[in-house]
Amino acid sequence: MKIAVLADIHANLEALEAVLIAAANAGAERIICLGDIVGYGPDPLGCIYRLKEVEAQIVLGNHDQAMLEPVRIQSFNLLARPSLYQACEMLGEEERDFLRQGAFRRVERNAALSHANPLKPEEWEPLLMYDRVAWCMSHLKWPLAFVGHTHEARIYCKMRDNPIPLTSATAAVGNHQFLVSVGSVGQPRDGDWRSAYTLWDTDEQWVELQRVEYPVKLTQQKIDDLSYPNYLAERLAKGE
Image (cartoon, rainbow, N blue to C red; front, side):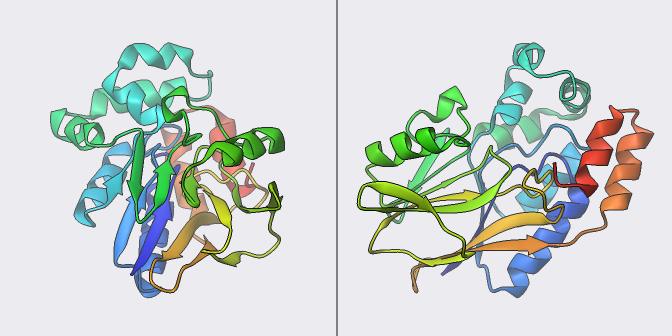
């Protein structure tokens, strides 16, 4: 079975649509979303509806948690707050119920899937720094883990007790331990503006980082129309 693992959609419907089409064309039979469906972007409702339509399984992200516990919005940076307050007003109980079904961590096929550090997912630690990746992988009890939250697409392979960031976008999994940072659908921050997701083949045992172009200018115009901070639109074209 091929599974599309995606994260950090951030209310970018154009990016999500492009990824769902690409995943279907690649033969993906299931969608797993590692959180942060909402926040920053202009279409929180549309993104939730599309994930429901494709029967995606989800885990909870910190932006999603803020929809269930609005008091948390004050802890976010000034760029994030306007869109989170707007999303709070837009979402009804049906949409919140969809988010509530997401746990902090999902485990299946001997793999852990979470938004942040899978060892302590509720603390929302992004695995950006090498020393934290190394610490995490040294304590993981699963041979494979998928994470979001970093907005960067990267594969780490643990060899001789040391995690190595792979230069390849494809890895055969099974003989070593792997941690896959699946990248961001709606707001990449790794220098590549294209949407990112990861394809996981559970039968052939491989993972592959994918990139997909989408009509970024349309999303930028929507953000401008909502009078969100200008940088939220500008960063989309730069992957930052």
